[in-house]
Structure formats: C-alpha cells, structure tokens
Length: 158
Image (cartoon, rainbow, N blue to C red; front, side, top):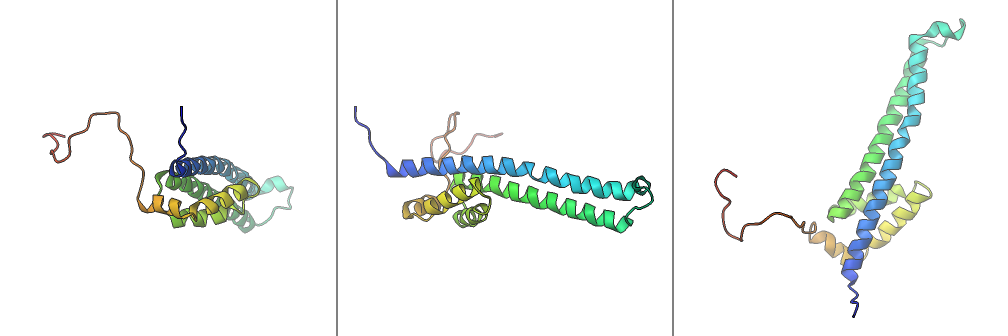
C-alpha cells in the first residue's frame, strides 16, 4: 500500500481548517455584544426610572447617550462577528482572497486565538498555489442526485 502526497489537497484541507477556525472565532465574537446590553439596560434605566436615583438622577440626555453607546457597541460587535463568519465561508468556497487577507489582518488584533488564526491565514493565502485555487473559483460540489448529460436541455416544467 502506497500513500501519495498531494500538496494541493493538503492546502485545501488547510483552507477548510482555517474556515472552521473563523466559524469558531465568529461564534465567540457573537457573545461579546451581550456585554454591551449592560450599557443599553443602564441607559434605559436612567431614562425610564430617574426617581430611583434618590433625587440625584442624571439628566435624560445622559441616559440616551449611554443607550447610544450600548447600541453602537452591539452593532459593531455583531458586524465584526458576522464578517468573521463570512470570512470562513469565503475560505471554504475559495472566493474573495483579498477580503480574507484583510480580515486575517483584522482578526490578528483579537489575541490570542485571532492572532494565530490571522497569521496562519496570511501565510497560507500568500502562497502561489493557494492563490491559484482562489483564481480557479469555488470547488465543485458533489450532488447526490442524478445529473443530465452535457448539452441536454432540462425537461419541461422544471
């Protein structure tokens, strides 16, 4: 029994593993905006129930400002997490290589897991054979159903 070494298949496996890493990072990053709910709740409390502060209530504008900060942090955290998940999808589909490189640089700021993931992504995506994988487009998807022979039109009603 001989085992053949195919470097292209190994690169594809590395890209799939990196995609899984971005899915995990995106999932963890979806939890971070939950902390911003504290700001949103505190600001709402300042606006809705100022009499609970024993006569030393802050102005309603302060509560609105704290709510705006909380809402902004929630939107920012959700956008970051969704971009990480989208990066994983693009790596798996072998699309948008430059976007994946930019997101790898941004994820490198998320220590320690994001740094490792970002550096490995940059190293892998700058290799010429991986660049060729992205230029050739997404990998073929195997379908479980029957397919038509090439050149035959689909039947009526489909």
